[in-house]
Amino acid sequence: MAAQFDRRLRKAAVTTTVAAVAVAALSASQAPDVTADGNGRRTTADSTPSPSAASGDSATGNSPYYTDLPPLNTPSPAPTVGTPVSRGPAEAGIPATVLDAYKKAESELRQAKPGCNLPWQLLAAIGKVESGQARGGRVDANGTTTGRIIGPQLDGNGFALIKDTDNGVYDGNSSYDNAVGPMQFIPSTWAWAGRDGNGDGLKDPNNVYDAALAAGHYLCRNGWDLAVQADLNRAILSYNNSQDYLNTVLSWLEYYRKGTHEVPDGSGALPVGRSDDGAVTGPSPSPGITGTPGLPTVPVTPGTSTPSPGGAGGSTGPTAPAEPSPPGTGSPDPTPSTPPTTTPTPTDTVHHLENAGTSGLTATAGDTFAGRISTRAETRSGEAVAKVRIRFTIVGDTDATFAGGENVATVVTGSAGVAAAPALRAGEKTGAFTVRATVVGRTVAGLDYRATVTERVADALARTGDAALTCTAGGEFADRVAVKATYKGAVADKVAVTATLVTSATDPAVNDKGPYFKDADGKAVRALSGLTTDAQGLLTLPKLYADDTEGTFVLRLTTAGGATLDVPLKVAKAEAEPSPDPSTGASPDASPSPSADPSADPSAEPTA
Image: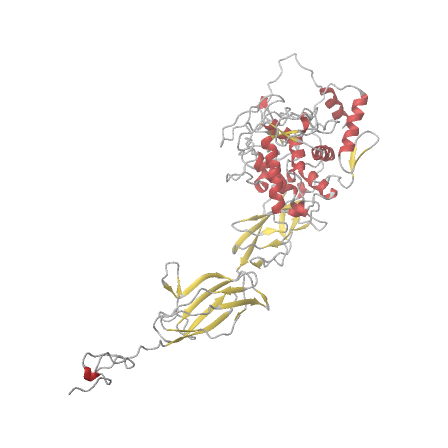
């Protein structure tokens, strides 16, 4: 760590011991709950990284990152809101599009996961450390980087060993994985964590809106509350499992919280120091970006996966073997090299996965599955393997999720080799889907669990009123049918109901006469489906009409779960019009018509 500080100070032309101490003190003072030990190293309470954490189970695969620390002086934002030019330190400026992506992601997470309390400044801190805010904001109007940002290939040569998981689609490397994009996701993590942040229908790790939203969801998984320091530390360490990484991110988080401002895209300050400075990096010694600091990134045609040139960025595939040195040159090594021996990790010993007793995965829509999915990791001989990360992924056309709203969960096996997935909650989509268990960091056949979501049900239906439902032939019913659905005495909400005017109580065939509903075109229909009870289990049917057939009819209501209710409907005979007098053609109650004949007038005087 001290060597990294010295390198940073040399690059910044600060060579005095006093400056080195000042930088160490800054790193300790800027992060919450961060202290410095006697050697200037930073320590943070409750943030010790897990030594057994697999690189493939972090967002970045524990790839290299920028180690530059914030300046000693507090940022001074521009006095005018929205002004792209500031009098404050350059490091406090964040490119406009990148800053917008962070704030948009924070806003969406407030709605999706309000209990997480994600601050956009945390995304900015990680974006600074991972890619220098997308290489100083080199993005187009949609937020996509103008050249791909690709880290070194994770081939185990100075870095983690993660073999290719995306066939080179994201990183252009079909042999090993590389961290990709402004937030440096490895392809295997992006496959489940990727999000569409700009609404274009794509999930592109090279788009800062997509990457920022994905990073927000990644940091908010596991029910973490980032307002709690211990959860904040855990979330950051899950992104890159390094104590120094944690302290660096916390330093930038505190710095951005004190103030920042918007700068034009492409004008952001570029970082210098890297966590892999001086490390043995094998065929990929260059920084984890396509291009060296100060130079533009390599343009990539959208939709292609052409790897960036080896000399301009991180290696994206196997490199050609080095040419042998001419005779008489180089430094001969009389001692043959011996490959180092390594002790297998628990993950290396896993041979297969076994079902640890899971069965009967069925739940009603909206309910939580009663059983938990459990998987046991075993060696070839069937012995349990502890401290292995098992990833559970929901697969298929379903809206079911694990607790917390995620469709992926990672759990470490216990001493019995068993990992139990979080509670599984059914969505509204009915039907079957799969939950797949896989070993993180090892190619072992996955184990699939079939789960089924059934319709919401009701076992009882009752009218909410008792008034008789009557009308005259050719008229309409004054009252509408209203019912309440229950299941085991409790309200049955969102239950599907079918309404059918049946021939009789014993004949369920649809009647072809009598009462009827009207469709959107005003035509008579005598069967309705797609009706649903509300949150209180209530349902009011559309208005009923009657044709000219009199009598008593039956309206039958049914639900999933077997609830049935027959509602009687009575259609009375319409009142008949009075018949006319056959001798006169006038109605019986008609008054005599006036006559011109005086004799027809009783009041007329007799004639002489």
